[in-house]
Length: 594
Image (cartoon, rainbow, N blue to C red):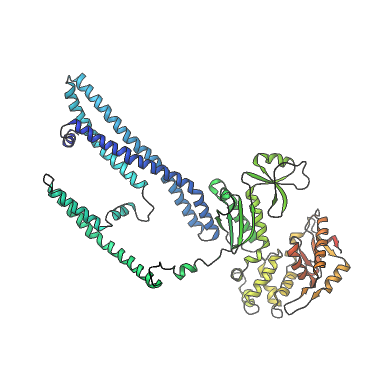
């Protein structure tokens, strides 16, 4: 320490103090404060950006762009990133404390050394100051240089931009990237070396080393310039001028596909889809997709979730193949309360409409939830509102999710269990398009196609003589009678039905017309409206019946009535007399007359 102090300060402790203070100020005010500030900002921005990044990962997972393993890996990388910047924020405080402690220890050593020299060893205070200040400055410089290196290293780490290369490789690559800059530094060192009084040999040696490094880095720079010039030449050739080149056809084609199913949310709904903020909407959507696969045999496509700043904070929108199908607005930190009809008293709130079934409802604060439930209201949270709305949207548009490719996937899956049944049907008897239309007809009327083997065998039986998808659908339904009526049975096993009076039945039979493209129901608009109103009135009068009332008609009327009812009264199923098993007891719930 004494030798180092004498070497650096030349035996003059005043010079030593000046050098030490310069290094201390440089370290504290320039390096450490900058490092600490960068670490604080990086940590805050990283934590603020985490919900959006997590939502992007979940959106990619739901849309099928990544699998569960890749999503888990990305979540782990995101966690490590947040931990890293949080740790660097704390490390900056350690570095700052190390610098401050070094200065304080140096001051204590100087004062303590002078006191020891004067009081214990009987030295004159000037001699004590000369001796112990020199030793303290030497010790301070020895400890300050490592501290300076640590501070500089921390600054480099926290200020490093994102890159795929390792930090050491990136550091060396940036220092040696521009060979002309290194050559200029080499020339400057030569000039310093020939200045009288300067150490010539060290400067010349250092200049030679830097010049050699510049020669090694010249090849990489030349290759990059050549690549840039080649790309520029291609762009000019393609455009015939200085305009930038267009994207390649492959890049443009990648923009063409539409997402089958999308959910756009306003920024206020992000907490509902962010699992890190206890959002459970994504898990609910996954459960809905699984439930539809079990109940209906239809695989709902992966839902692509994205935030849309053009929407209101609490607004969301459902899109199918790029077209908006449904939308609604949610009030965050509120609950949706609905009166089932027997509420004890009315509660105050913001009036609205429940989006799934267009029922009157009110938004109430979370603090009013208990009061509303005690009053007899049905209270649901925002996630449940959106999930219920999505369930209803999926149900009404199941046919949209059964394209030819999806139909082929279902048949391929069935062929693993019954290869002969699939092989005989497609394409020997029916085309894939006809099978697709039959499946679409079934799911549009909420008939499960999970028993696909029965459907395929029925199509194989009637396909050789019938090619019309609508007629084939009716024959398939007759083979699936138990599956069709199962959701509508009462608790005692009976089936509540609505029937047509003799006048209405005769009028409907007279309205059936045949055409080249199949039959249709030739009802004038007034009669059609009167029929719908009558069915709706009778159905409303029997809503309290256990079980779902179904509209019963003759087989030749069923498909035509179903097409009419699904447009105006989609909740009332239409079945024919041939679709009721003999073992099922029917119960008349009303008669439609007009």
